[in-house]
Image (cartoon, rainbow, N blue to C red):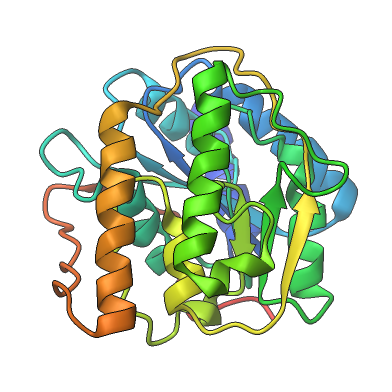
Length: 287
C-alpha cells in the first residue's frame, strides 16, 4: 500500500471512530459557503477539543459553488463530518426543508443548528448543549435579545427591524414561543425526542417556531450570544423568504389552532448525495 493510500485509510478510520459515539450533532445548512467551511470546522474542532464532548458536523448543502467539494475533502482528511447535498431541483422546502431532512439523520443526543457563515459563533455550542446534556432542558435558544446578547451583526437597518417585527408577530400568534426572547432566530438546540411524533411542515427560515409549537418540550433555556458580522458570502435573507415566513405562520396557526391545513409533504431523497461514514441510525445515540 502506498504512503498516500495508507494515510487516506488512517484518516477514514479516524473519522469513523469519532462518529461512533456522538454526543452532539452540529447541523449546518449551507448555500454557497465555500469561503467559510474550513474556518467553521477549525473553530468547532478547537472548541470541542476544549469541552471534551464527542461531536459530528452534518452539512445539509444546497450549494452551487465548491462547498460540497470542501466538505468531501474534510471527510477524507478524517474530520467528523457528514453531508446531504441537494442539487438544483431537489431543494424542497428551502432552508426549513433542509433542516427537517438533517434532523431526521442526526446522530447526537443533542442537535444544535447553526449557520455556516460564522454569524453564529461556533464557541456558543457548549453553552447551548450543556443544559440539554447535563441539565433538564429539552430546548435551548440562542438569543440576541436576552441580557448579554447582541444583534449588531444584522447587516442593514431593515434587517434589524424585520427581526424585531417578526419576533413580535410570532409571539402574538403562538403562546408557546413566549418562553423565549428570540423565537424566530436560527440558532437553537434540542434533544431529538422533542420531535418524536411531531409532523413538521416548515417553510422558509422559521424552523424553531415550528418546533416550539409542534414539538414536545417543557423546559426551555435562552442562551445569550452576539450575532456576528458576516465576513464572506452574501446574506440569504430576501423578500421571498420573508413572504414564505408569513405563509408559514398563517398555515401553522390554521393547522394548530383550527385543525385545518395541508399535510406535511414527505421529504424526497431521490437524487440527493449522502456522504456518510458509518450510517448512524437516528435513534442509535450516545448515552
